[in-house]
Length: 125
Image (cartoon, one colour):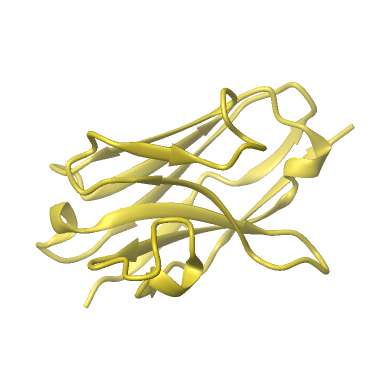
């Protein structure tokens, strides 16, 4: 069992930066692929970025590539999302997620066994 707690959301102006953190409980954090998803009002939850268990591989949605960076510190049981050059369309609730076998692939929310409660990110124009 893994519990995930996100932090770092808030209000920022377009063009600004914000960093999110997701702290995980449990001693097996380093065995999980981790990801960030987001959900804007009235829209489905969508993939943002994911990172392999070792941190050696990362994947990004086209909409955030070059602006967002996912990273992890397995010693601290924490995954991060650094968001730069933010746009109003990045406004959403951001969720941290973890998967072991990731049977539906790294981009599908159906792969992820564990989810955080979400943190709101609002980008004003």
